[in-house]
Length: 303
Length: 96
Image (cartoon, rainbow over the protein chains, first blue to last red):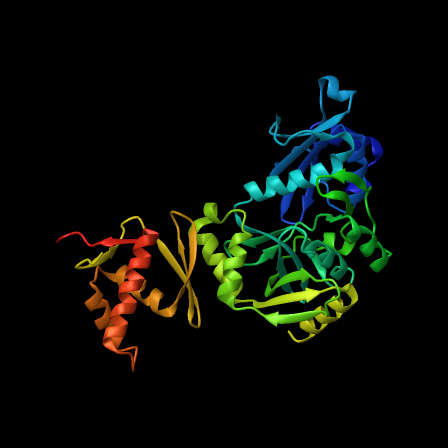
C-alpha cells in the first residue's frame, strides 16, 4: 500500500498520532506533524512511497510541530523535534516542508552509519551510478533534477549512501530540493514534473520540492554499482564539457564531502577508495540542461 | 633533527589507496586523509614494516630507483622524514 492509498482520515490519524511510517528505498522513516502545510506537502510529495505498519520500527524519525507559547499565534513558528527534543532553531510557520526535508537529511546523515555518506547527488542508468559531489550552489540539484527527466533514475539529490559491505550506491529517492531560479528552469525543462508549494524567504531563498518520478520511487530499493564520479559546475555561457580528473584528486575532494568519514573510519575509507577505483572520475562544466543531458547520454552509451 | 632511526608512532593506524604515482593514506585514529607522491609513500611504507634510519631506507629503495644519485636520494628521504615527523606520524625510534 502506498501513501496515496490511505484515506484522508487514515493519513491524518497517522501523521498526527504516532507518526506516518514510510519506506524510502532502503530506509524506513517516521514522519509526524501537526502543521497543515507539512501534512499537505507530505501527502503530495510522498504519495508513491509504501506506507509501513504503524508499529514498524523506523530508522529515522522526524517531527515538525507548531511552536508553543506566543509563537503559536504571534509570528508563528515551527520546530523540528528529534526524539522529542527541539534540535534546530525555530523557523517561520510556513517553512515547515523545507524544514522537514532538511531535518530528514540531518537525521540520515547523522545516523545511517551502515553507509559512508557523501554530500552528493546520485543518479543511475543501466545499473551504473553517477555520483555528483558538489558544494551548495554548484548546480548539482538542478542538474540532477534535469537528468532524472531525461532517462536517468533518481537515487538521491543530496545524500550518496555507499554500502560499507558491498560498495553499492543506495538511494532513498526522496523529493528533490530546488531553489530560486532553478525551480522555473526545471518546470520549463520538464513540464510533467510535479512540485510542492514554493516557500519564499528561507535561508536558501525560495525553495520548492520536486516529486520523485513514480517509477523511481518504485525502484528505490534497487542499488547501483559505481560508474562515474562527476564534479559538476554551472558556468554561465559555458559549453557542456567533461574532463578527466585524477583519482587521487577525486578521493581527496570526496573526503571533504563525507559526512561520516570519521565515524566509519577504515571501513569508510575502504569504501571510498573502492568507489573511486571503480568509477571514471570527471569534471563537468555546463550552462544548458539540454547540452548536459546530451553529454550524459553519450556517457551512458559509451559504458 | 637527525635521528639514528625513525619509527611509526604506536597509535598511528594507516590504510592506503594507490593510483599510478599517487598514493592516499588514511590515518584511522585522527581521520586524516593525505595525498603523497610515490617516494613519500614508499618511505612511510618502509617504516610501517620496521624502524629504520635514513641510510637503511635509502638501501631499501635504491634498487627500485635506477639512475638516482645516492646523495640526492638521501636528501629527499631526509626531507620526507622531517615532513612526516611534522605530521606527528613518526618519531625517533626508541633505543632497543
